[in-house]
Length: 238
Length: 332
Image 1 (cartoon, rainbow over the protein chains, first blue to last red):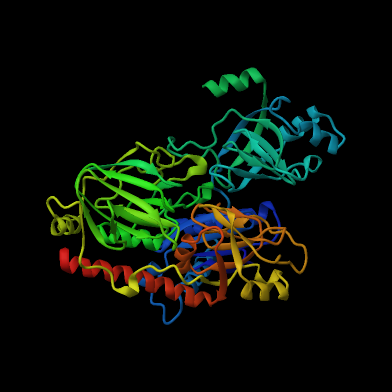
Image 2: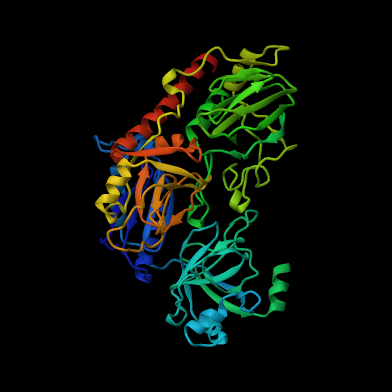
């Protein structure tokens, strides 16, 4: 594993491993590798990992660290950092893991795509070209956040790279597909939102009644598929 | 065994130790804002420290007991009455069936926890009984308690709960508070408004003036404060250079600074990730004091090392084990 990382505490119960400062597929691969490694190590004190663009944050139980290790006067936090560094030395795991590949149906009709005209005009292209660019690219889920089930995906083609709205909308409909800089994402719930909205998916992104409540997980591969309004409503009913 | 909510007050939700293991899907941990008060309330009712409790915000709530029950109250923001008799906080209390508890105003604190022997019986969703209101997840039907809601306690009670309950049973009296309780040093207090912190990951991004300001100024808890976090008001904190942070994990106690220079303290329902520079991390043991702040109150920050913060947290956990040990010796 790439030895170039830094570990710093986030709180008394979490440390963050930082693999770089920029969004890149390679750095993200390192984040996901570390995620897998530390999950499978099944340390007594481990609670959960939170992958992000360039970081993996590890939540732990300090009392358990103290209980299951001889600290020799060190703090639980220092001990966790030491153990993580040791664990990350095992670089045997290469990227052979099966990633979920998810096709997301999106209706890009103007009724749902509040900002598709704006995005198109920013880049002097047509709305159809926005749709084409958005659907022909493959994306990776870099991280989840903002609300349960919200995927931060990248990397958007340069011709779609559009800044967030200066004033966020008070409410964006559930399923809205948005663009912010080089990222694309989907709002699972009706919430305030500042991303440029270019379509809507009928998929329910987060449902506590499902075994796996979220459709996406960090590391998933995603493609968008344009659908008509009729198909949108049919799928929504299904 | 059940209670009926006559009035929920400002906001009443079922909470527990939070939802662990789903942050990578963007699901906040949530749980009781004042974890220490929840732990204490649960221990005194003979429960495990993170069993489901009701979190009441300020005063106004009224609760009718439909059966004899063993409860305990901890936290602040209200004083509890049965008729005109005050019910003490931080005590085990036996309440007679068809008794009404009313929460009246109190100058100290903001949130009261009501534990019941066995814990409140709401379905477990994603390993927790906590209510996360923004996504209507968990707790009582994913929502805040409303008048006429009926809430049951779990049937399965610990030996500790049963024995405490037996010892307090008082026939026709409306209630009985235990004549034993916590050592004074274990009773949560909320008058000290100095919040200990250690430097956040982006502390060095801020100007020296901002550092001084953070260490010396008062910070006002504004009205834009809820279970997700508090917007704080003081002089603007400034970055040395305008820089952007890539979104990364944040947690309860993280103090972020928004582009307008204002600080925001993340609380129980904190988002899992954030993209604002983090100037500070509040010591976990002081988050209880934070949970008991009301809008309009001022706090100050005092720096400690992360090692000390960890030590304080481990000591706090030891305290809880001691209380449990004493209870077991007496009632186990």
